[in-house]
Length: 403
Ligand SMILES: Cc1cc2nc3c(=O)[nH]c(=O)nc-3n(C[C@H](O)[C@H](O)[C@H](O)COP(=O)(O)OP(=O)(O)OC[C@H]3O[C@@H](n4cnc5c(N)ncnc54)[C@H](O)[C@@H]3O)c2cc1C
Image 1 (tube, helix red, strand yellow):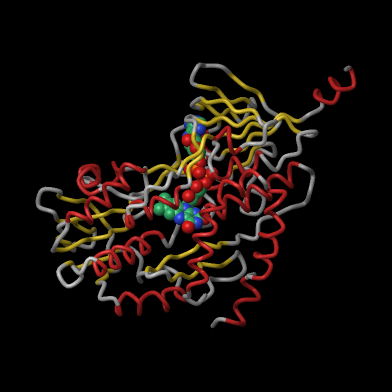
Image 2: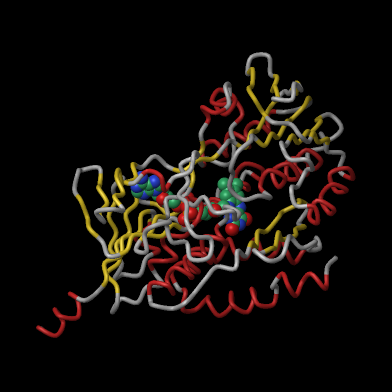
């Protein structure tokens, strides 16, 4: 008994705030004989957010959430509570009840949230037509919007600012096009994609595949279009550049920001409330016992589940004393409709690869969705598969194959 007590007293206390993709993946990777791990989340579910796309554009009714408790190893503690304060100086987190929990290590995995207030009119437009970057209800509203349209202009607008999953704005656009074509309404519904970037997809090699596809499918697009405000009554979206986009329905990818938590010190946050950290180790600047992973970070990497997954792995290794670091690997599936897809693949040393569009890539996306919670719960089974995949698709190797 004494031995057991001694063992547990030397365990490092790790608090992970957020039981989403990154937080749950990290918790299940930390050996129970070395760490006492507690996840705190404000709500009880782990969400598979990528499926919002298929609720919105395919009318999928597949469940996208599971209880956080059910995707954690049984030795990981789970507390359902809002975290109000993270005090990095005095090493505690404060719950909504006022209770304070101290830690040896804290990992912030609180994701990103949408901020409608940055675009006047956006809250009303969301109420009218939905969006697929916030919740199931809004995604379902997009599906209803599509089903109610018989003619007119559908605008898909990428608002300026951070957003989750770089391909997702164009994925929605392509799936909307497929929807109307299959319904026999394509010649009656004009589809316009508007973006603040200089080209439809920001990374040029992928854009070389995407822009011709938009043209081939008769999808109009407007670049350098920085959404300023929307008049929901007149159904016009105005850009900062002075352009007026008239629509019959508009689906806007809203600006994303970090969640509302008080930090001490607060200068670890950037102006969008994302947490600043070292891009190789995810360590919060000035604190070697605090990390941020996934969408909550201000790092110059895509806000994707794959990024959160890889960062969780690196932080788990660092906490176990390894000299691990991120490569900045991005590996985002890109559904271009009609059962076809590509991947956005890059890392800190290699710009995006012109990865070909084919059916296998789409299959990978669907297969990953089917295995998502299994991958979270059993890293010991899945890690070797991912290692092999990431090694085979290293950007440095691929760039010689695809130019
Ligand atoms: C339409 C769409 C398509 C996407 N497609 C893909 C894709 O194909 N591939 C891909 O890799 N990624 C994709 N993503 C992105 C992916 O879903 C996210 O990048 C991923 O979920 C990020 O994980 P996370 O752990 O950082 O945040 P989340 O999974 O969002 O988890 C954050 C958790 O923190 C909790 N939390 C927040 N604030 C508090 C608080 N104050 N106190 C306690 N808990 C709190 C939340 O409740 C939540 O459970 C897509 C996203 C969208 C919206």
